[in-house]
Image (cartoon, one colour):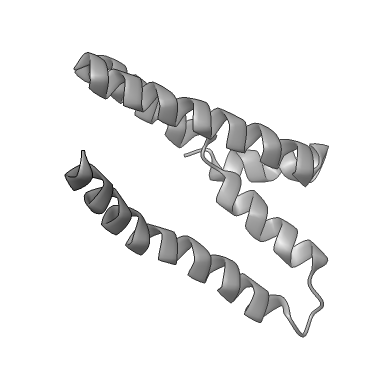
Length: 104
């Protein structure tokens, strides 16, 4: 939800500032999500996930930064790397989580 809005704001105010703010707010929203699960509060969980969706535009800002700093020749390759890293996180994350969960 927040990607296009944060992307526009990063064009206006600078990518570094907005990337730091977006990452901080996204982390905060994820902590709230974890707390809501611990509290067994469905409403609090939904609010925290809505917040994470609203401020979760860090990937778009990172992509825009890669485009800004890459040469014309390397743009596609560098965007491929950042997309690969994000996709790898979606694959490896659940595996690591399942291994960690079974340990406790």
